[in-house]
Length: 204
Image 1: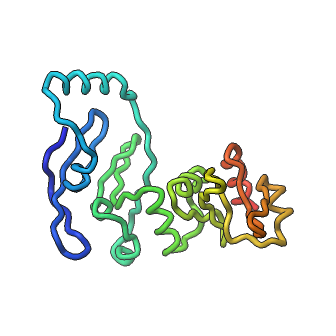
Image 2 (image 1 turned 90 degrees about the vertical axis):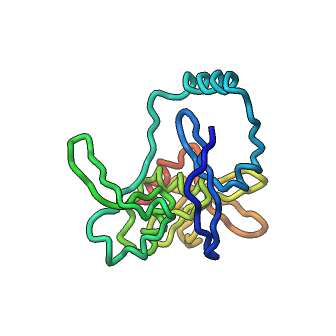
């Protein structure tokens, strides 16, 4: 199901018409041009109801997601927080224990960017570091060590950047492995043991 929604102002100051794509378990805003490019087909109400009901039955009862709430005195660091139009909103959240929190909401990739600007220390969990890398970001593990996802022989791998070759034996003891590619030494994290290895690197 699709319906019109508010427009978006582009970086050049122009107006970009938007639509809201509604599904049984989520909604997505996109430009009209992006919507047309996806080549959706118009169907009868009867067909739509059958597909909608089938998706409702297949949808999980609960869905969990991770986000970060930055609260406190935000005005002095407002510009450093960055983010998109949605993250500029101030949210009031109530926890299961009835504590009320007020602040701005950010996803994992946005939170890494904030940490790089404010440098408050490494607070992202190992799983968040891995998620950011797998989503195409550059996630800080510790100090000058970063995790990215690289493609080697068209296979995605978790690669460590910012390491010193003198510490290769140390990194290998944590579970990393070295590989020479085009005469360059590169350091990778085994995908199946990534959580364990990142946690060891954090505490090293």
